[in-house]
Length: 257
Image (cartoon, rainbow, N blue to C red; front, top):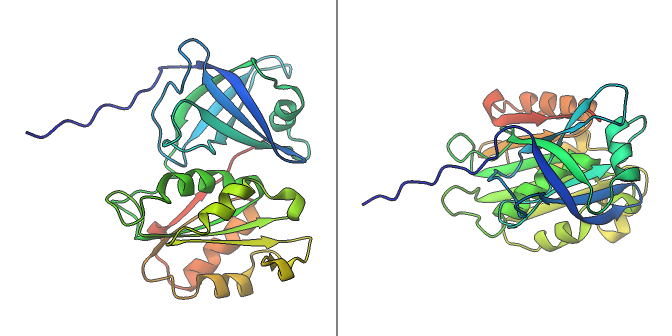
C-alpha cells in the first residue's frame, strides 16, 4: 500500500511571527530567527529557496511590504530565519536591522516562490551565483541538500560562486567553510574590494574571465541559479546564453529593500 504524501502545513493569510533570536552576521547584516507567536515553532512547510513577504504598518505613512528569502533550511526544525543586510536607502531592511528586537512580532505571508531546486526539471549539477545578501537562498539550498547529494529529489553536485566586498562582509561564512568540505559541494568566494588571494579567495567581480574559469565543463549537465545585483545577473545570463545553455536551465531571483 502506498502512503500518501502529507499536505504541506501552511497558515492561511498573514501570520504573526515572533523574533526568538538575533545573530550578527557581519557589521551590517543580521539573521532573525522567527517562530509562530501563538504555537511556537515554524508554522509552515517550505522548500529551500522560498521567501516570506513581510508587512509593516508603522514605519512609513502607508503600509509597506517586502519579500526576503529564508536563509534557514527545511531540515532545521522549529524556526525559519531571514538574513537581512543594511542597504543604502533600504527602508525596511535598515529599519529591521536598527529596530527589530527579541520578542517583537512581524506579520508574514508565505512561504512563496519557485526559486528552488526542482529535481523533475533541473539537471543533476546545480550551479549558483550570488552576491552579498543574494547568497541567502543558496545558503538555504546548500544547507538542505549537502548531506543528500545523489539521493532522490536532490542534486548530485552543487557549485556556488559568491561575491562579497571584503572579509568583513562574509555572510554565513562558518557554514560555507564547513559545506565546502563536503564531497560534491564546491564553494568559491571572490572579494571585490579586497585582495586576499593568498588566503584562497578570488579577487574581483564575477565577470566573464572568472565565469569562464569557474564554470568550465559544467554546461552539458548543469542548471544555473543567480540572485544579486541586476547587472551581475544580466551578465551571467548573457554569458550562459553565449555558451548555448538552454533558457529553461537559467533561473533568476531579485527583491526590493
